Image (cartoon, rainbow, N blue to C red; front, side, top):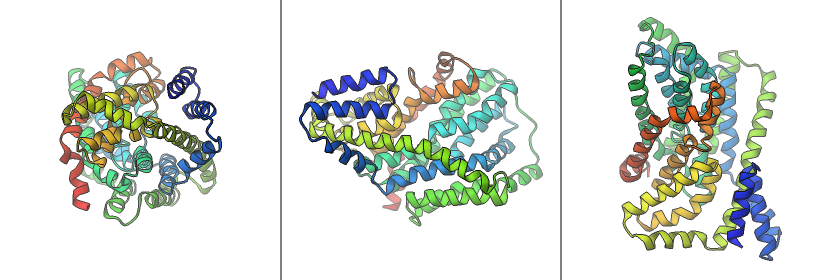
Length: 423
C-alpha cells in the first residue's frame, strides 16, 4: 500500500494538484486501504500545525511585507549601491549583497525574488545588463535568504524533527555569508568579461547621507540576529519584534505606509501563510504514515548496507536531497525528507544541527535547478524571458552554490563553530 500511496502522490503532482492536497489525497488513500481510523487524519493534521515555534512563520512573512511597503527594501538597495556603485557590474553585486541583508528579515527565498527582483531586474536591464544574467543573479542570490537567519525552512525543520531552531539559526550565519560572498565571484567575473557598466564613485558625504536614511532599515537585521543569538528572545518572539519594528519604521519614520494600509497587508499575508500551514499539517500526516511503515529505518539500513564510509554516506544523502529538491517545493521537501534522512546522518556521526543546515542549503539550491526551480521560474517571469534561457544563465551560479554545499557538508566547523560558542 505504501508504494501505491507514493504513486498517487506523484500522479497528483504531475496533474498540477497543489502539493498540500497531493499529500492529503495520498494519505487518505493509505488510511482507507489500511483500515486505519480516519480520525488519525484530523489528529495528525492538527498536531502538525499546533506548535508555538511555527507561529514565527506568519510573523516573519508579515515583517517582509511591511518592510517592502514601508520603503525599507528600497533604502537597503540605496545603501548597497552607495558603497558598490563604482565597481564593474555594480548593480549585480548590489543584488547579491542586498539579498544577504534582506535575508536577515524575510527568511524565505521567494520573498527575496519577488521583492528585490521586482525592482532590480528591470533596473539592471535598463542599465545595460543582459536580461538572462539579471534573472540568474536574482534567482541564485535569493537562496541565501533561508540560510542566514531567520529562516522559515529552519523553523519547519526544527519543529518536525525536534532540532533546536535557535541552534540552526546560529549555524546558518557563516554558511550564509560564505554563499553570498561566493556568488559575488562569478557575478564580478561575468560582469568584467561582458564589460557591464559601473557608475561614479559616491563621495563620503553622499554615503553618509544615504547611510543616515538607511540606518533604521539596517538596524532591523542587527536587532533580530542579536536578539536571537544572545537569547534575549526566541525565534517566535523575534518575528513579532520584527513586525512591530517594521510597522513603526514604515509608518512613523519613512512615512511610506499608513495605518489604513495595514489591514490589506495583513489580509494578503494571511492567504500566503494559510497555504503554508495547511501544507505543514498535511505533511505531518504523510510523515506519520512513513514512520508507521518504518520507512526512515528502511532507508537508513539501505544506505548503510551500501557503505559505512562517512564521506560516501554524506554524498549519498546530498544526491538524494538534490534529486528531491529538483522536483519538489522546498518546504514540503523539508517535511518529508528530514524524518527519513536524519537517522542516516546521525548513524555516521553527523550532529543533527549540521545535518539540518546542510540539508536546507541543499534543498534551497533545488529552487534554482531545472525542471521546477521555483526561484528561477519566478525571476524569469519578472524578467519576461523563458525559463530555459534563465536556467542556462544560472549554471555558473549553480556550480558556485554546489561548491559551498560541499564545504558545508564536509567541513563541520563552518556550521558548528557559532553554535559551539553559545552552547
